[in-house]
Length: 93
Image (cartoon, rainbow, N blue to C red; front, side, top):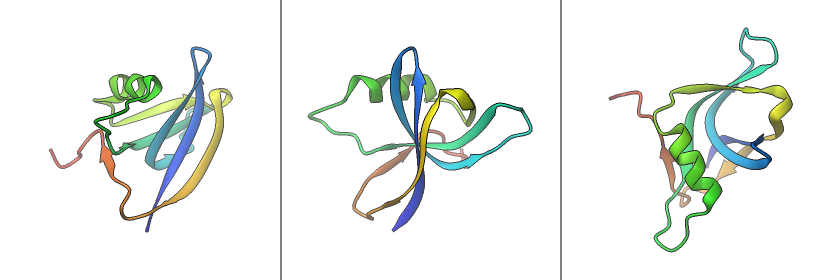
């Protein structure tokens, strides 16, 4: 099993979910640093509008800073090894 962070946050009155390998408190007050952004596996049948919105917004982002007051919840979750995870930004390239 693998552990990653699942963040739920407000953006434009929507609650979006973001998966990340790293979440840290940065030196910037009131912000949370999120890096190693990932997505759960793609489906040929269904892509939710929120997932598509996040993919487009964070496609070239190496790390981002979210305001603390926009965060609804941060969970540290176990992934089953069958669950596909797609990294948005490959640091090796």
